[in-house]
Length: 92
Image 1 (cartoon, rainbow, N blue to C red):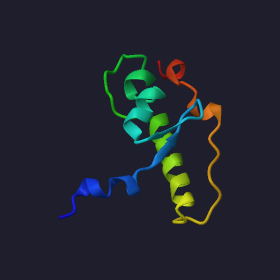
Image 2 (image 1 turned 180 degrees about the horizontal axis):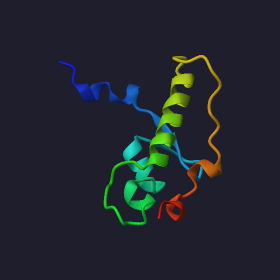
Image 3 (image 1 turned 30 degrees about the horizontal axis):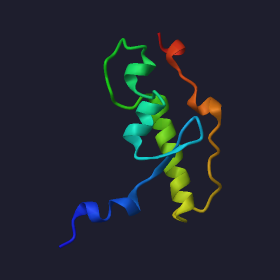
């Protein structure tokens, strides 16, 4: 009998990091790139959910994956170093 985990690899999305490396799965990606609410608010709000910038980066990576898999007919969104800039200074 097939299990959910038997099919997870074919649905996994790769995420490009600020150093150009590729990670599979967004949890490690968000932590490595410091895109959690906690980091975005300079630890004033202890919340490990994705920050606004983190959600935008996830969306761009998912869009690019959809282009790679031919679900969307479009050009990929180029991720620049500025996309990964740390927004801490602008929050508070």
